[in-house]
Length: 601
Image 1 (cartoon, one colour):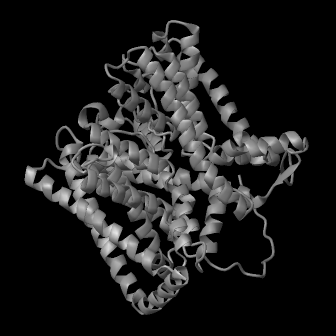
Image 2 (tube, helix red, strand yellow):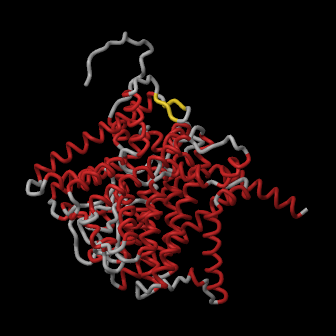
Image 3 (cartoon, helix red, strand yellow):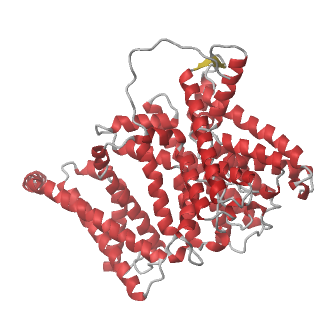
């Protein structure tokens, strides 16, 4: 009986309050967005500026007020929900966080006991980190709820990708300009250049990361690298997850499919889960190996430094960014003769550069089991192309570099093993990472030409690297040999490469060459005092998001920095993406005009 009365009361209560539901939702969402922005601004102010005791207390009050608001908001939504169990299931992360906060408040009020990492008085340590993470989740949820505005605006996927990078660079620039991010004030253009280089995972620097930025500034750069490395995929994830049930959902799911180079929407969602697991697993393994090595060899004075350097360089290597916390990059005396971490970084750079689709096809346990069960199942053609091209380029170029630089930059390496490892590392890094084991300013001109070609080719599709991509280079080479041999079709392992892919490959390389030629031409105008080959090297490095520099980057002025910023931006989003965003798509005509023939070449 009591249970039936309770059920009746609940039903009557829900019927009574449902008429206020829509109005309350609008009020709560508006207030939630406003309070989130205020609280995040307060936390940014707390980290970015030197504050007084009164300002500190005000920030603490804002944080506590927002916590109370979100607890109240969650309870109100729970009361209004008809299926309460489903509501808790759908908002499980919020439920856990709010439950911990409420539990902590009860323990303090009744027993004067604090949960250690939720200690309200320990505002500087774990509590603030927990709150920052909590509000990051809250903001992402609020943004997802506001995604209907994007549907109304009807922006194309390429435009949204361009805007996502622009937003990341803008936020990074603002954060790097804050007083507590740098050891001394830096200019706007230097902050913009550094933010763009980190967000576009390039690695070109006009400031010394070890001396110009504080620990907090270095953390911001590391976060920009991680977000930049996964930005396009994260962007696709966001829309496929939150717009799946909307009228525009299918459009963004197809975007995700194209970005991941899969054949089915179901494949793309499965691969998407694997991408984040794979990324953080590989980076975590890199961190563990680097940390253990640096700890046991006493490279650093403290465990904290060992861990942070391991974390920073693991993220930088896997995302092919090439940023280093040493003044001389990996040429610094502290690290130059430690070959184990150099080997780990080489592996991370290669894994990050071959692409997530290739990694998934090669390492996914389910796919491996299927190949063992069904012997006829093999690696995908794209995986074979990526692996053949990647290791072919690394092998051939390493041999060339060894021959050209044996008595030049490699002369400082005493053993044959050191010379070979340096060549492999430098070539792997030159493809798109930008780490230095030898001084690039000392390269002979033939070596610079080889390095520029390798940078231009870059990494593989769906990876964290740049360039025209290895598959584009492969298709162009196959097309050239097919033309020379008089073959009508381009084939690879009993598969025909469609002409649409060939056309796309030619478009990519032509637009890339146009960008590099134009940017180099402008650089020769604004930086006439710098040698042409140095400017060309920097232009290719920026466009290919490689980050190798032959010394010109430190000499360029305002105009040159702006040109390189644009190069890094265009190189990261891709020339085709930019072209699609700026052009108006036309419907294909159903008729076709007669063929015409004329001489070329």
